[in-house]
Length: 311
Image 1 (cartoon, rainbow, N blue to C red):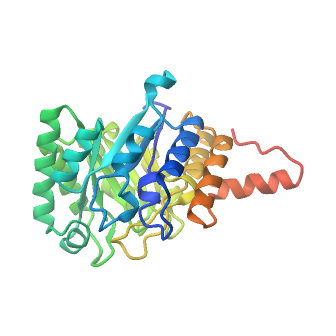
Image 2: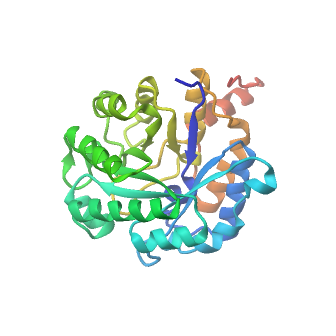
């Protein structure tokens, strides 16, 4: 398996969607530029959802043309838009997104709160979006949300995210993301869910999406990496939270994930030092303290007059 790892930055979307302070469009664009300057090449900056449901994403169409453009920078940038339904998909398609992310939660309760659909209705909606995207030449990634536990119904059996993953691949989804939406999982569960799926479909087909509610996100990320997964979501400074998942805290901090992977010999192409400016801007914009553990350690080293060794 390759020693290259991909980190998909979801701070602009998942990180900001649940913040009480609305971040303006220009600041979001500036944050995207700082992330790209630090080496980020995969970003999920928007979701095309009802502005009444998630007002922080109301500027998705306005933000899109302000994002850094790979053609101008002479290196590829990979943008994904989250879409909850066929209407959202059409908006993302018309905005020019080459990849869309779909959401399928593991229980009726979570799908009802998130999408106002039952589990079966949500699965059928995903299948319809995947079919439309295939016809339009747009790639799809389906998130199996609440893969470890539902915020309303509690733990789910490992067979459920497996079955939903298989169904989405059968529908033609290019990738599947196993999402610990409320940070309720542990490394053994990660292995139990993903090992059979990887044997069947290959590790390159999977992302993992982790929230650090109980402090186990790094351990779970490494459990996935140990199985061969090389695609991960993360959020700058640990921003995050789901409006429809009570108790969900921030995603795993991008800077902590970069350190974890790089220190273990996996190359991300992302500079932790370069992320510090992005964390500072995100903290200022959201009016809350942010930053992964590695940044606190770096600051403590600097206060002692030492140069942090992070390679």
